[in-house]
Length: 238
Image (cartoon, rainbow, N blue to C red; front, side, top):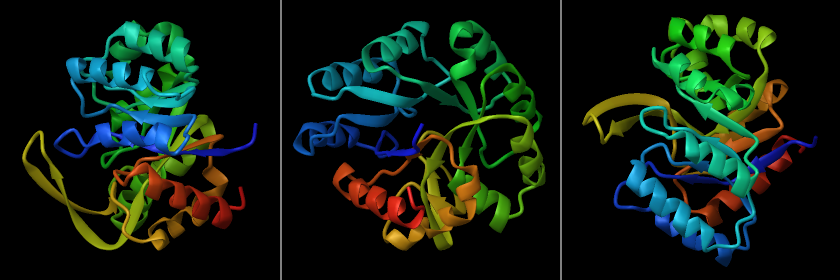
């Protein structure tokens, strides 16, 4: 299977900005995307599904699950309606229970590396398809910030399959990442907003770790993401 880069329909920004991305789908004749309903509650996700159904979108090869409240029917819907192949989740302590509740998809679920690489991550990957490797998190938290636990990641990646990648921007200096749900601030190099194409140049050093599906996790409009996709395909020789 040839590697493909997917534009990301993300939901991090406030004010329902994700609806603008939905409107872009037909304007730009986009047939497949990666879906990140991570910041939407159930009612908002139902609205998202309804709006997507009105577009000409054909496939969602990758979807980021929301382990807090995502219901089984949602996974069934994505697989049946949009032929979703891979899912990813975070790794809180309860994640194994979530995987067990969605057991028929366990081989299609992959655990994302986050700021903290703790025991729950290592335990979770044993119960599913393997690792969702977020390249920006690895570059920021693992390579630049030397967060404890990240030194184990290369060995883990030798033992577990990389089923999908997230790819975001990495800045030259730390930027403020505000969590609107907890009202907390953190400062890291990785960002879901890209200002310059050079902010994805770091991905070249991780070419050996690219999965077949590489999803852009960016808040930028899909039109801008098309430029990012084209640039990445060139520098990664895809």
